[in-house]
Amino acid sequence: MFLFFIFIIGLFIGSFLNVLVDRLSREESIIKGRSHCEKCKKTLQWYDLIPLLSFILLGRKCRYCHFPLSFYYPVVELTTGILFVIAYLFINNNLPFTIYHLPFISLFYYLFIVSCLIVVFFADLKYGIIPDKIVFPAILVSFLYLILNTKYLILPHLLSALGAGLFFLFLSLIKIKKHRAMGFGDVKFAFLMGLILGFQNIIVSLYIAFLTGAIAGCILILWGKKKLTGTSIPFGPFLVLGTFLALFWGDAIFQKIMLLLLR
Image 1 (cartoon, one colour):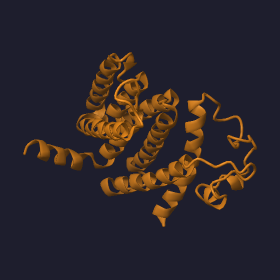
Image 2 (cartoon, one colour):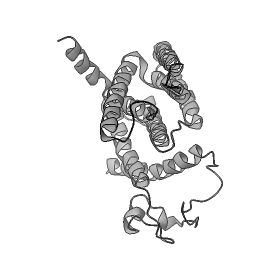
Image 3 (cartoon, helix red, strand yellow):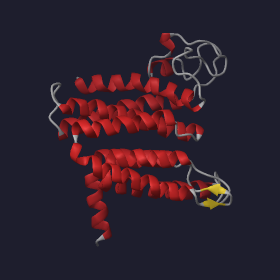
Image 4 (cartoon, helix red, strand yellow):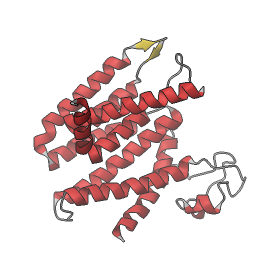
């Protein structure tokens, strides 16, 4: 029942993350203004905003103008719900869960980081933007979490963050056909990744990100959706994917990678 409760909380948080994805990317206020239909601008009522349920009951259409709704909205909500459950299981299996000790703080931290990563994933995928208003607070919270929970990891995680950030800064200076290989948003996000993951897991996350990015790029080129030169693919979603996998299963993945390399 508690897992179901965490999942439901994730659905509602996911609904709010949809707001962050759209408004932060458009530089709109996340406080002022109620949710409205993107087509007819009609203000939506509370029963139009029930996560997943409203989308299904409305038949994927606006109640007022019947304009088709994007699948982004239920996907973000469902993804958040599932990842909240995974985060709780990770904390519960690795640390004794109690309201009186720091593992309780760990749960809130992981849920916060998961939320930030979801916003980065969909903002970059949808708008080609990694919002600073997500990355900078996540950096601050991650640093405070290290101070409160694992002081002995502050130095290695800071070095990992600096290493990842400098590596992506170098890549951002490379130009291919007048296009930068990486955006500066990727540089700031790479710093956050290093701060969250530490040395071993940042290696795992970047390995996964570059591998999946290359595979996706090849598929899109062969499919005719992208050209070999002159077009770019948002790299943020692949960085987020690598971060998620390394955050929860980094040790197991690292061992598998090492076994493959040492064969």
